[in-house]
Image 1: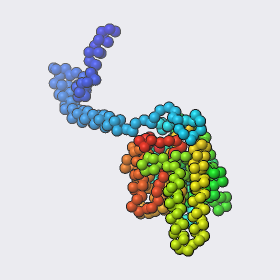
Image 2: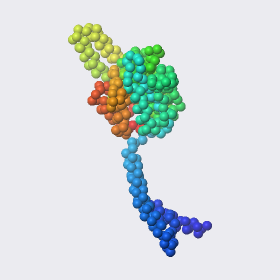
Image 3: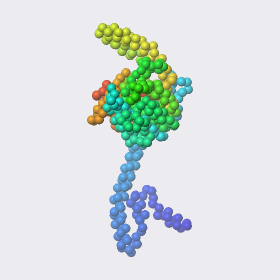
Length: 397
């Protein structure tokens, strides 16, 4: 037994030996007196040597690419719990997700066939986004729910009941480091705010395919269903490609293209209000004068209170990021790009991500805006459930 072990170790290939020498060790030795076997062995090595050389080069190339990918990979998100800071509930903290857990997605596209205000690109948005998530971020088809109004199955129609049911499904049993993705492409709007958490006095809403019969879905309800139940470390990425969608999930931290937290700016509101007053007065529109003045005074008296209430009540220990197609007071375009009907925001998001999937959140906001700037006036928005550094890199979706 000892002799066998010694013999085996003497012929074991060294890991640093070139691959073709490994093969020479592995091939059966030819008898020097047997011309046929010696000739066969030499011919075999003549065939294998160039193949093995190419294999070694390929392996080295793959290793170099792997090392480069590791070096260029985005840094991991900050670990542990992080304090919110001023304005949030006492002792409240949040946790980033590293997006290594399970993945689920809910994608909604409504063209409103046969209705006034019919759209053309929303269903295409869902198809494009689902393919992008599947091909680039590992979302499996069985873990995606698609609600579009071209489907025959009543359970797959984007009715109010189906949408609310699917929202509950999306967040059910979510654990730290899971990745959840929500995408809505359709009509959006505003309705009077009843709980005092909106600076402009209006809640943002989305319109199911049957909204004329059963009504819309308000941002407060979407926040209650999809944000409030989430544990620390769960990622929810949401995209709203709809009008008036700037704060459609009621997330308290809204960021500018410079990565600066936006807060109520009464001086700016005063300037805009006075411009409206002057314009109305110059046109002889005295009712417009009164309306602009009342609107400004309302924002002046409620803006700070609403902002502070949102900070105190709409924060979350989870990692929630939302991209919206427009500000709260803007519309979003239903466009035709490369001969395909599509929502401008959905197209810009996928295009910007394909060009550079390892951007910071603020860089991605600017990239999306750059894609839209030449043809569209809408200004996509970035909002979060927690404070965000301008250098935070997007880790997964």
